[in-house]
Length: 140
Image: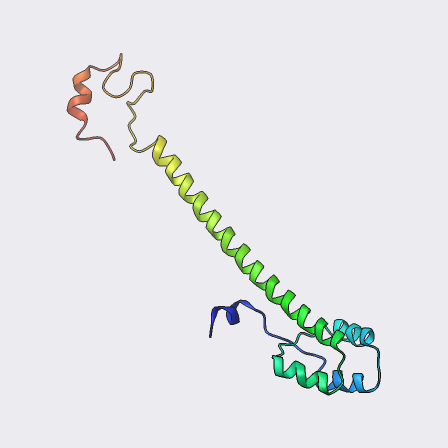
């Protein structure tokens, strides 16, 4: 099974090809046949030989063109939905990584004695040796 088969929806013909042939043989107009196909919400996955055979049986080319274009639209919409779903998951993963990088950038080590004005090792409240001796015991 190739990836295209997994991404495209299955064809669901509720109006059979035989019924389309009988409607065409009854000299029904192509627009009316297309309206019946639209009303039944049918989709067909036809090969080239099936299209030629239907044309030989009297189905008008306008009907066959409509069947093919609707199937192609369904394929493209299905692939677009899959791409959008994957892009959304990718954006969520990227945002999660950005948030994690943001947290790690501004809080790589928790140090309750850090002050941005004085920096590490210099504080008006503690002697500098406190920081130099205590650097091994900092939480990481």
